[in-house]
Length: 472
Image 1 (cartoon, rainbow, N blue to C red):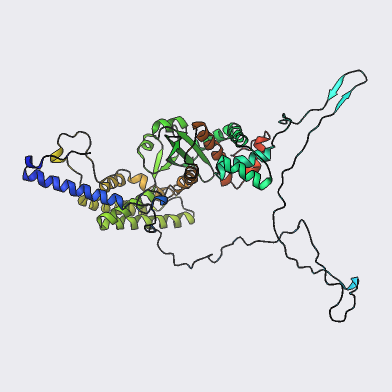
Image 2: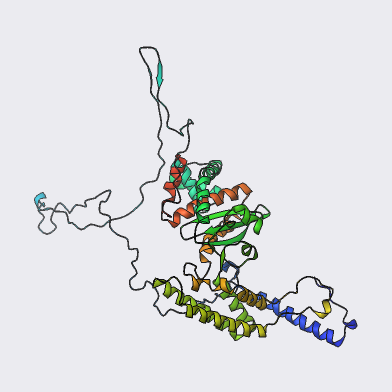
C-alpha cells in the first residue's frame, strides 16, 4: 500500500501532481471493475448476473435456426433392424362377424422403427485350459490368454469405460464408480477406477510422445496456458495444439522453465500462435498474436476512455478478418500486397493518433525515490504492443495458414478448466500428469473422429492405436 505524503510539506505544483495521480488511479480502479469477458481475458463464468456481454460479431441478418443448405442430423431408419415385430389384425371382422382367412392377411411394407438401448448388464467370460499327458509321459497344458492373470479381474472394456468417464467426460472417480454400477450393475471400487487411470497413463505415454514430436514439425501451432491447483499448490496447465493434434502438459511454473521442459518450442521452426505473453517471444520461431484478445482490449479502451480511434481499430481488424476469410476461401495464400500495405498504413495512422492521446507517463514528482520502470496505463501498453509487434498482429493477412485468433488453443484448454470446476483441484501432481497424458491422446483422437472407447479398450488389451495415422 502506498503511503500518502504529508500534504503540508508539498508545493502547489506537487499537490496538483498528486491530485492528477489520484484521479488517474481512481479511473484505473473503476475501469477494472468494468472488466468482464467481452472486454478482457476474464472468463464468462466471472461475469455474474449483471448483464450479457456484447458480441463483436454483429448481426448477420439471417433468421434464427438452421440456414438454407444445412444438412441437419435427422433421425434415419436403419436398413437391417435387429428385431421385427408383426402386430396382427383382429381375427374376426367387426362388420360381419366372420373369421378372417390367413390368405387374406398381408404385412404392409412400411414400418415404424424404435431405436433404443438393450438391457445393460455386464458379461462374464470364464477361461479354462486343457491339460494332457502324452504316452511318453510328458505333461502338456494350454495357456491362458495374455493379460488374464487373476482369478477374477475386469476386462478392457470396463477399464476403458472408467478412464473415458473420468478423463474425457470428467466425472470424479467416486461418481464414475457409481455410474458404472448404475448403468451396468458393476460394483467397481474407486481404487479400481484409479488403477485403470494410472495404467492408461503408462500405456499411452509413448503415443503422447509421438503427438509432441509431430507438433514440432507442424507449420502452425497454437499455445496457451491456464492456472490449475494440485491440493493447495498452484500449477500451470499448458496446451499446444493444431486442428488435428492436442498435447497437454503440467508444471509448477508458467514461464520459460516450463516451456523448455516440454520440448516443443525449443527448436520449433513453424509459427507459434499465442496471446502475446512475454516468455513466448524468447523463442526464435515466427510468432502470431491472438487478435481476439486485441478486440476485447480495444472494447475496454473504448468503454473506459470513449476515444474514437479504438472503435476505428476494431473496425479495421474486423474488416481485415472478413477480407482474409474471403481470400482463403478463394484459394489464396495471402492478401494482395497492396491490401497488406493498406492495413499496415491505416494501423500506423490510428496508433499514432492514439499515442498523442495516451502519452508515456513520466515519473511522478511525489515519488522520486521509486526505482524501476514507470507504470504505464492499460491503453499505452496496448498501443505499444500493437506497434512493436505489428508484424505478428497482422500476420494472418500475410499468411492465411495463420488464423485471426488463438481460439484453437483456447477451445482445447476450456474443457480442462471445467475439470477444475467439477473437482476443485487435483489431489496429487501424479494425477494431473496422468490427466494430461490421457487427455492428450483422447482429444487428438476426438479431433480425428475416431472411437475413444475402442481405442482405450485396445490399449488395455495391449495394442495402442497410433494417434498420428489419421492426422497425416
